[in-house]
Image 1 (cartoon, rainbow, N blue to C red):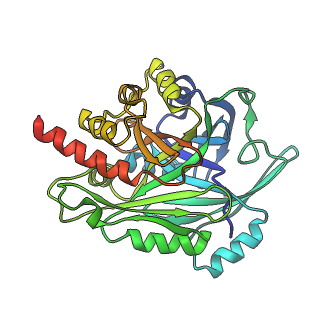
Image 2 (image 1 turned 180 degrees about the vertical axis):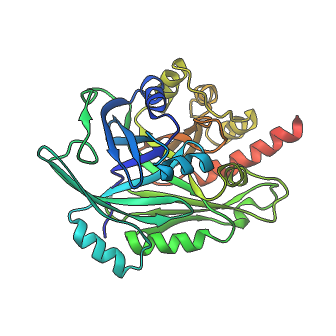
Length: 354
């Protein structure tokens, strides 16, 4: 199976209308459609949001019978339930997944609406997450059955979904790496091990998986047990009550401009210690350090290639799900390994000085 990209990311929430509205007003997504249907157990409502090639589905329960949605939100808060991958044939996909020993979590479901048709099924990952595989015909939305509302925006700052990052418990990352690699035909392209965070009080293991065709990237991280202080990875596991998808990264063309625009709409970003920019200025004085500092943007440079990253504060009440915005200058292909290390180091120095 060759994965060409992420068709959609679906978030389960307590009140879909309000969360969809926030994404529209704060992040500039268009609410393209709304669908009410009977889910696996009870009635549910889903808002389809789109910007560039990025599709989000925001889903909540319409009645208590939809206990799969209700119990997920009760346990994890507003959080990503699944992401979707488009396939040419759902029947062929099911045969392939069964032969690959994937954990099937739902059988094929077909939906028809006027001339639209979609068929989908899901496999299990992590604790309560899924990957959905979707075959579509004549569908503008990720699935058939959406009542269209807004037109697609003519201008957008988000290009697409760059990657999804997940957090798993200690000693689980290798299992899920092998599981996803074998099923989705992914390559392990980057690894950060314990030695990377030597002499630091916090740290993590990070593995980056990528599809050899198309644009699909998956990041999996786990805590380091021997570290003295808890990292954001440990905090996610504690507050999310288990494994899950920690953040979603959107690719943009101009990150500095994007941050300015989002801040004007009330979006808050995680603060980067001053020490980080002092070190960056020594390494790459030619960069616009003052602009990066003002926007709390992390920067990694490899000759003429540059990676710029910024992270929002959690979008819900728990310190779990957040968004990343990323700019790849001259087709930078990495995932900010040195950014991560320098940020961990700077945070420790910042905390020690307080």
